[in-house]
Image (cartoon, rainbow, N blue to C red; front, side, top):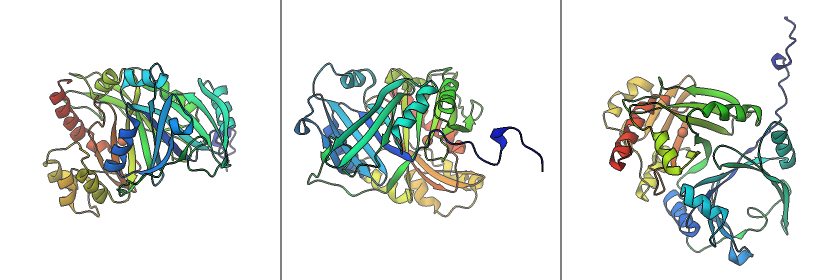
Amino acid sequence: MELKTNPSASAHPIEDFMPLNGTDYLELYVSNARQAAYYYKTAFGFKSLAYAGLETGLRERESYVIVQDKIRLVLTSPLQSGTDIGRHIDQHGDGVKVTALWVDDATRAYKEAMKRGATSYMEPTTEEDADGKVVRSGIYSYGEVVHIFVERKDYKGVFLPGYQAWNPRYESEPVGLKFVDHMVGNVELGRMNYWVDFYRDVMGFKQIMSFDDKDISTDFTALMSKVMSNNNGRIKFPINEPAPGKKKSQVDEYLEFYEGEGVQHIAVATDNIIDTVTKLRDRGVEFLRVPQTYYDQVLDRVGKIDEDIAPLAELGILVDRDDEGYLLQIFTKPVNPRPTMFFEIIQRKGATSFGKGNFKALFEAIEREQELRGTL
Ligand code: FE2
């Protein structure tokens, strides 16, 4: 057997300096958290979990926490003028501020990131109440997005210290959303590789895929994307940058309306996309549509699938295949007044990729929407 001298090629994998258990929560800064919570409960099937605001002693902000299976969303609004939350909303509209990552040791995660060049957002901080303690720390990512490391092994409360259980009379039925599959960032032209390097060097992620303008281009728009994943694959962050096209690309449109870099879409997994999308559509969630001709050729492209094609075509669900299996996916229209953030619903049947075979049909659908907005 050949002697290996390169430690990275040894049989013993290098220790993961940034072990992440999964996504802990996503916090959105929104202009009306109370109404946003109602929207995400009613339309997307989240349940009420926790609340913090005037009644819990806060004076500057109000936060509602809603949950569906492993997905926790925190919706936060300011309670007065002149706050950083209000300034964030004024600049960006509603959007994702925090991607919180669940760790066993938030102090260690912070130190590992900082010594590799991260910018500090929040030093390790212990918060306590009658249910125990939580340690959180945070670093900046692209734009104004931050990653907060959450260590909650000594906590049995409903969410975080400072929050109280929120049990309103009104709840809606879940729609089958299970966990965050991936979360995509849009960055400025020329900055994709900078953030790829950041996730590799500072967070210990690996690049698992890349797309360039030859994979992703239509007559009008193009984009480039690289997908970064943590060691156990539970955290996946594709990073997009615009590529020159004949007209304004969807990434350019996002950057213009968000007034900076930020989270483009949150992909959430389901075990039954037909059932989930039927329920979402019935509750008023609007999806991007591809022409029905997409379904004339789809089975030639992806081969045999378990689902009937008719309900997929009726709902507008897209199909793609890679070496490991296939996936079903669909994208909502933007959920805010500005054409910025949207959601993806995804069901994986073995496939570990992101639907490259659908990009062309999808981007043409996005361009039709841009055309209506006059932003193409
Ligand atoms: Fe996606």
